Length: 233
Image (cartoon, rainbow, N blue to C red):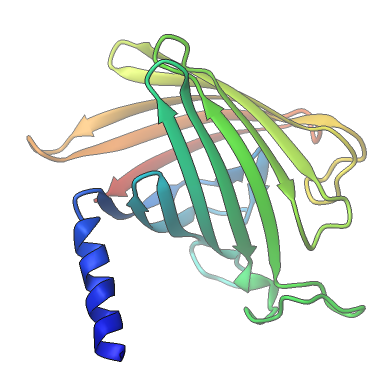
């Protein structure tokens, strides 16, 4: 029975191999800025691993502040998503993310909160839309499903365009109501940004995407200038 099950699994994986894609790599950023929030107060190393079959993707993503002098920030997330793409209408996605912060000192297996300790995990659901090449606007909506008394939501819109051989993306994000999670006492814009991305050729077959972002968070009256470089295989 066990051998037949393993054989069936191998046949299924082989049959889907032409549709499957494995990606892994890492980003290095001068700051970890997430949705307009400066997290970790330090440069960040961010490894990633994902596996895609058709429209389904599962993956893991992390962020680790460096240098690692205590106290330091670390994050380790798992996610699953499904994307349905059309040629004329763009693509629609659903995303589920499990956020885990090891640096908070709560064991990974501690899911159920108590009166003395919150859960180690924040679970988030989201949907997004990306327009076709004729109108490449992106719209996203995310909401916390657990470990957040405010059930905080975040809404974002972005629009990319090309300048010479670089891509420029304009982003605006806001929370619609009071959220301790995002640090707001009422609905507010927390993320206004412009990002420039350009691929720097290293060899004929390998290039490094470089990004520079200028990000403003009106709710805390702060701005950030962030540099990043990506290594993806």
